[in-house]
Length: 330
Ligand code: NDP
Image 1 (cartoon, helix red, strand yellow):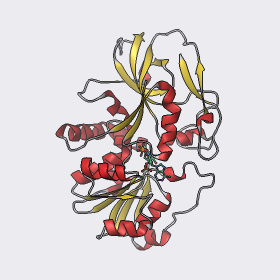
Image 2 (cartoon, rainbow, N blue to C red; image 1 turned 90 degrees about the vertical axis):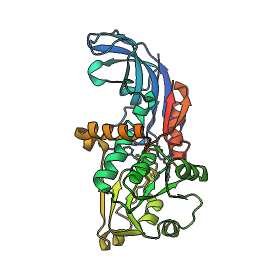
Image 3 (cartoon, helix red, strand yellow; image 1 turned 30 degrees about the vertical axis):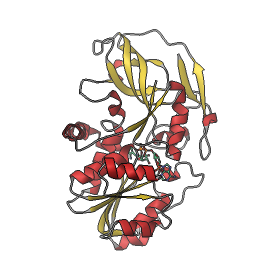
């Protein structure tokens, strides 16, 4: 079988040299294990952090070992009473065309009437991130203005739609006019700002949000966030979800950058990791599932065909190649 390993730790912006394709033999199946064929592979911004060896909330990938992440796979052979041949499962699995995994590390999917790759997106880690970050930290109230950066990505698309369900005005920030158009015409966003062409972000946010900003759901950090923060209202909330604009920086700027705004406006800024909410995942899944069935939450993805394209798809996240969730289909 083929697998993709971490060949070297990138410094700054990663490129294809960081990855290497290898062939390997599969071990014999033992009791409690299943043989899986990968169907849909998730590529996510957090994987950039795991390519470095700095300490974080997930252990770094090892050089010479396969990259791993969320994968939807099909059972080919089973030595577990929990799974039968043909079942679909999701798990944290290596980037390999086939793999042997312990049944207890897997969860069965595919019994609901949704596409299988939804479990990597709206009904998976990104959807839950959107739900808990917005609802628990953002605490949206009817009539408030919510700004979302990284709005056209996997998390951002869901954040905006949940904010609409809560009766908020929603403004999305993304990196192309096409994405802004999609946010407004397909995902209910009221306004959009293309941060690549907007010029002065502080002015652009002010124009889009004449009543100021009550919640800033931050996926990107950096100068985009500076511009939003200058428009925050008294008692605004910032769910600090991601900082993708900084993941490839060789030097990270220090400190909350617009400190006077945060202080004088009594702003709550709170970082979080989706797994903080692990105990409540069933609630999040139920809510998201209900909104999908009701037609209040929609989703889209950029599906790249071919296992070999995993590195390219991952790298594409940093140049905005995806609309919605970036997924590789084997
Ligand atoms: P996305 O699907 O949003 O993909 C990444 C997007 O980020 C790209 O499409 C691109 O869109 C944008 N982007 C890339 N580089 C920059 C940049 N320099 N400045 C501004 N935007 C940039 O990814 P996800 O939805 O999976 O993740 C979004 C964020 O949420 C990430 O920061 C991620 O790390 C974080 N996250 C946090 C979790 C948590 O538990 N806290 C869990 C999951 C995700 P564009 O064209 O608009 O530039």
